[in-house]
Image (cartoon, rainbow, N blue to C red):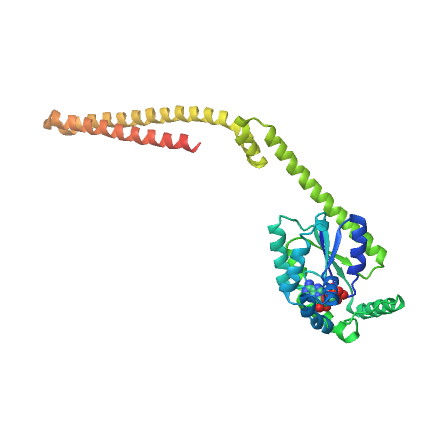
Length: 317
Ligand code: ADP
């Protein structure tokens, strides 16, 4: 499983990440922790990050993207990971998208822990007190002044990621104001739903693939057709018989029309002949013959027209 935890400082990302690690056997990749380790070890990255972090600013995108690109390559991340504190800006999210696509890895969900800003200062103060109690050194950026800068950064730079991931239909927003146990339960509930939906989709894809593999080569083209196209093709089968019948009927009608039209024309030409004979009188046979010829021509013309119309009719059906 690959997850991102999104939320302002003090939202409870670290606490929930640890629980997810235990439950799902995946690693927590916290850029904050990694940068703090780099600062402590005084690595080149640590030297860049030290002052930026202490003042509540954001370490340059290329630095954190580089850290994450290396980290998700490592063996322990193969099973999955939770990104905590990364991505923190839109360019970081875009770089992560590209990285995951390149490595053919799928992001399962982005869990946003939503909290009231007014509750955050109290939470961070509590965290400081607990750290002091345990004898741990307190983070340089856990002061009220730096915290307000970190919050402002979150609002401006990180909150836009809510839209980035909701557009990708990956965002799950959880009320981070609930008690820790309830937040955990809610995260588990939504993750179970996401996993189930993925399994159903995967099973459906497997079914299609195995059906394709099982069908003989002759039917291969048929099997590769999407279900809707296959249904359509099947539905058109009985129609083909109907089509044949209609074609026959159309031919019949066309024949009849041609015959009728020819009869009508020959009748009129006969009438024409008679009329012509009457009118012609002395003019003799030549005019009569010419009128008869005209009549025959007209018959042919109408017959041709009727046959064309009949053809059109058959085609349309
Ligand atoms: P928070 O408790 O405020 O969420 P983190 O422990 O995640 O803080 O990070 C502490 C500091 O480390 C940040 O204020 C920032 O300076 C730096 N940092 C951590 N992750 C990133 C990141 N993805 N991009 C830039 N800077 C980061």
